[in-house]
Length: 103
Length: 120
Image (tube, rainbow over all chains, first blue to last red; front, side, top):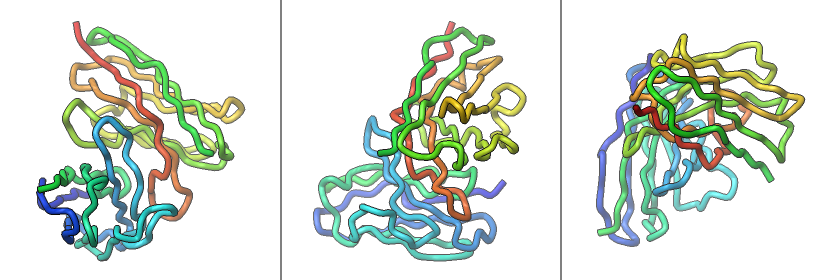
């Protein structure tokens, strides 16, 4: 199975900061990489699909890029409501998650 | 609007069985693949199983293969997960999720989850 790694495992940033999370696949997965947001006690929510496509209704401050084995997820201006854990996913594998807090 | 509502969770002893259900509405259930994903307390997400829209193909995580069975009844718009030989490490919130329907695998709608606790 393909392995997914994410970094960092957690981060703390100020409101308005640019936040970047990376996800690396153990082999070439083309652009088949998705990003999810999970707030405490809630189900995950799809934000980005196929590496760079914004899901309908998701704010434009969220974006994704990459292909092959290296991918990046960015929040251009962190908002208080973005406090959550973010997961990358490809087929049957999720990354370990990145917990985002407000400094 | 799309709704997925899981039920059937609870407390079960090790070695026991449980069947989860996921009632779907707001979309044409019979045309989409469906998943089960679980999350152990304080842990990350773990993909459990997938079933094609027509039930013709099923896939399982190695951790549940041979013990869990995914199925669906398109006439009832319902997804199931039969869980046998349960272990303590199966304790988790179980989510059903809908496939987005595009090439690749994306979960575009999720249920609220149902908690399964395996304990003596």
